[in-house]
Image (cartoon, rainbow, N blue to C red):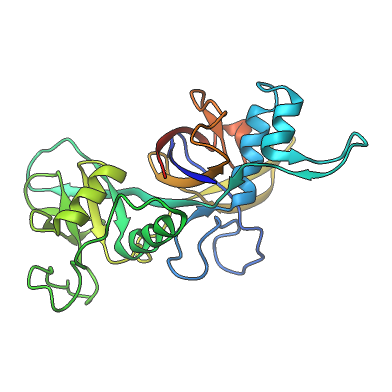
Length: 273
């Protein structure tokens, strides 16, 4: 099986709910990696389901069943698909910035070093080995590591924004002395402008108040977390050969709230193993 790496860029806000009952102020939270990074993800079943829904009218049924598997609803046999789908991992999401120079940039893609390290370990495991993490810029043994802020945890590097930069109110350090491997990886996967933090736990996802109206009267108000547009996810699809029979030229919708414009994304292949 050949691994194909795909970049998913959110054109609109995205909400893939975790389905859990919680007692916090947020009623509907997004799916997250619960083991290591607490980073938003789209579980593999959601990736596969969204792609199957998207391609079901573009491909003949036999091809859909071959790629995604047959569900046996028409009395036929239930069979697994030949393509293998993996979780989509949120590698970068917008963080607000201010600068001493009028740069015209209000947001910068924020990346968690722990998240990047975890995802590269996964990519290496499935056979995509072209990028490396390099030296940990946040290690105490690294003389170029930024000085922690007043709360002891505000360590940030920023690349591509001139002047002194604050990210979500926290002072950042220019990323001109990052390890070459790390800088090349961030540029390839995120772009020439980014903010790198040890983790993104301290930077909350935005949320919105939603309201159910009945004959103009509010019946229920709830708070919903979402992943903002311009966020970048990556996912892997395994295929039997070096070519993939899925055409990703059209916009694809992931998650819920499609009727109010949520989850519309551009998806493109980056490389294959």
